[in-house]
Image (cartoon, rainbow, N blue to C red; front, top):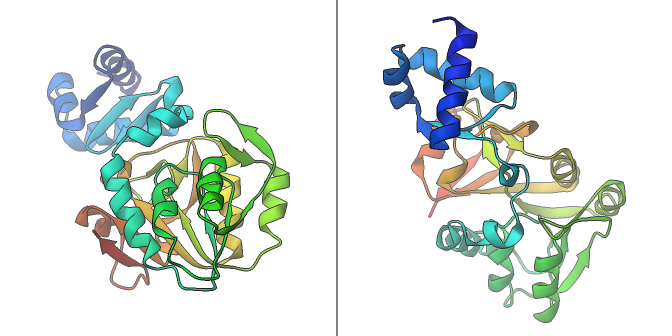
Length: 250
């Protein structure tokens, strides 16, 4: 079977099954597992599928930017544990940036005891929660994306550039097999790039659903962050002994 024929077969299977493991594809197509992985990598590069842990998923509209209320419910308990640990890293009188991802949203619940902190965010929901708790908060302003209730665009990016940020707390859509952080939309990627550039310390929150997931836009290699807070030891596979990143498993 030629490559393009296999690609068509894989896409046809995903139309029926939505998700399929690489092992199952190998059996169905009568090819080796490395061949299947190469095929999936190529289809992901073409933005025809989404790589998921151990297999692939069909690209659907919600994979581009899922509605906020839906994404908030996905792995909510895991995200809360990550946020609790992340909040422990915030020191009094710091300027921090919390991005608009649903992974970081619950950090607001654990910051009430911090003294003199300033929070910058492009997330409307988290800004509202922080303000109600009496925490000094700046929301970037800018174009509002309905599905994420967040600000993006040049106005938001320029606002972030006004600050010297002590610590950035962020997440993204996925990490490729090669350790590249990726996002499904360019505006999301751009706002995080600016926040990374302005921050002294970079903390990435990552649950196990983000591993080996590829989306269209590259943000940065995971090795460039200072800390990864995660719920799985498997994140360590992206690092070599000489990398400076500290992985915290909760």
